[in-house]
Image 1 (cartoon, one colour):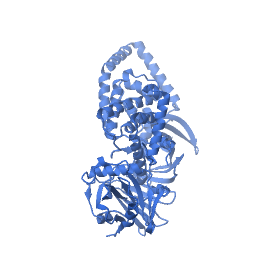
Image 2 (tube, rainbow over the protein chains, first blue to last red; image 1 turned 90 degrees about the vertical axis):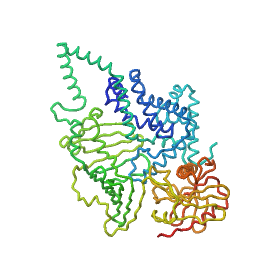
Image 3 (cartoon, rainbow over the protein chains, first blue to last red; image 1 turned 45 degrees about the horizontal axis):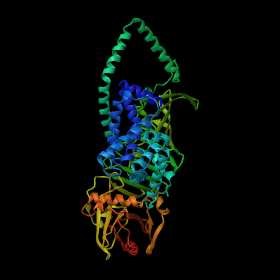
Image 4 (cartoon, each protein chain N blue to C red; image 1 turned 30 degrees about the vertical axis):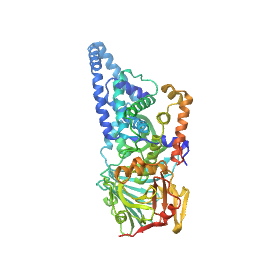
Length: 180
Length: 436
């Protein structure tokens, strides 16, 4: 967090290195969040791009306090939702060009990991936006249910239920149970 | 069975690596915006700085402050004022003199299968040799369009040669290469530690939440002695030590020629762009390294067609399938896998046996039945829309696995439920395509 504050201050002063460092630090995380919500690499990349551009534009107004990662995750979720509403595209699946972070030693292990990620992405794509948003913000953004509820103007119980139902549905889908 | 807790863990461990093209696009546009928004502020702060520095008293005070800051920085970072400390830039400079190195690599995982310890000889970013603790040797050469990996088992005199056609050339995601790219500003000094009578200097760099590096450096050589890479989200740590830069090893150690006397299994993975087309079962047999089975045309089958199409489960590469249209409006897709690794297909033995057919043929459930069928049918619809209309994808779609007595496994996707009597007939009708 201290590093984030330092980087934001430096970015405000026009430091390219600070901006580059923020990109290196968070781009993978934000792309993971965006892809989990949009399911298409091209859309997720656009969302991450638009986020960084508006992040720099609004750098002066940014408060260098609080959890930057959670703030970024919420912004990306907003952009993803707007984008999906605007485009009204059906869910897609992991594109050919997606690279999953992996330390797998062999191409076979990489393929297995990729297939797991593919399955998860597919299952996420079957959920209503609010359910997957609750999952993505809690699991990837490490946000508490109370934080998500506050940000989204929902009750904590609603967010908690959305999260639980979402995970149960993914579990059912991956275990080949019939999901209505 | 995956519980919601398993799903949570798996989700948390899934990380997507941004493409270089995204980096270029984002930074180019963001730098542009940054330059626009910064111009007035930079000008005003610059002129203020000049005003202050033009005052004589301020200049002396500033010089003293800079000196004080320098002293404080050196002390806080664990260095000595006598100049014996190591700066990260010096380490990078030294490392840049070497492209090849040898080290021991260990992976400690909190859960999941153990990764064997190995000695890695890294010749360059595309060639390496791994001597694994179980006695096997892996030689990887990714310089050409068609990279090769050779796995040798000297005790059993067995070799597995894998050719990845059209996959390369590729560079290794090499840890030492990543370490070379740490910049001074974001690399934190950790002070010192004693090891084997030597004082080592530590550096820490965490480029993101998934990677946390600690590097211990010998102040004499200014080269790493130990590298520890923690993957906090994946709950594992990679340890590299026993470094030898510029090792001496005969070039033949990096050869992907199989030594004499070895029994060789050759696996070819075609990673080139795939043109979807109708092929013969004999073509499939020629291209795969194992027995190929196709169904005989049964009375209830309206058509049986063998095809090649892009593999919907892989970023590149092709897959062979046999498409069966039935008289009750069902579409079946038999997927011919490339090769079978017990390591990957360990899950298969745990699946429910749906059918035990004569001749030792069995049918098992697929853990991702609906998804697998969807991906293959959608892949087929995209590749050959005349043969399958993806909008007719059914909610009843499913996947099962047909396991043949010789270990060959066929995926069987069905768009609708398969009529009960037809599954045993289909399995019994599978005929071996003789090797050419």
